[in-house]
Length: 298
Image (cartoon, rainbow, N blue to C red; front, side, top):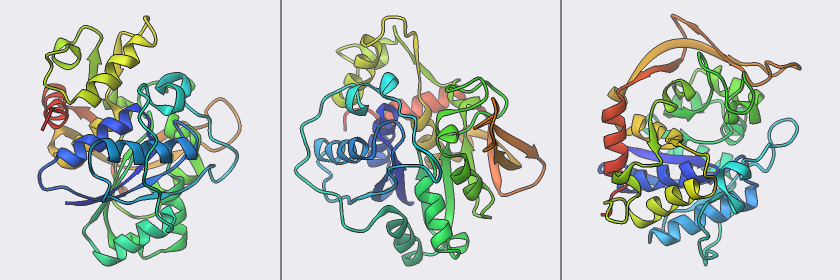
């Protein structure tokens, strides 16, 4: 499976990237960065630093949107830590490529029509801009796996809205209405797959997790003593791309509220038809085992 990861690292983005690089049969063609969890400068630096830390600097990083289609991003530094990660990585020695994210996505989709899977882990601004620029993406992309939305559960930014959907509802609507097959992995299932503070298999010194993954998670808990569980949102989206049978998916037409009011960013699904498959249930134990397995020291 050939993938491009559109990402705003971000602690759970970092884990998802590590999973992709450890997944047999998955080829990561590149990372495209977007603002969201942190500023575009920080997310791009984090993407480069993560790849350098993992010895995968041959994978290109393409910069994308610094702001949503309208307004400005609401960053998540309070959750992910200073700079967007809970660990301070050395400044990267590599640079992002010249080609910007929408064109990078279009180029790769055009080169392998019907085969590219786009894994979208942040606000959907880059993806929406690519679709607006190249309508043929509806035929060229095999699928977009999106981490975002809260359909039947409360949001994590407001009672109505999940972070990625809230940060660019107009872009989300452009993607969900594009006709491209979308798998939507939202808080409905992400909140079921967690690492707990006392989960020794993940956090203890003799854990088989890769040191970077263990440090990211351990520092996240250490940064706030009130935290009891870490939702594996982006890792679950990556797991769903690698092993789709982990989720129960329902066909739907999906839209995100972009109007004024307290429902701003609310994701709504009308089930029965449509190009979006909404995750309604997850095999929790299997999902967590797969994520753990792909984050082990290799």
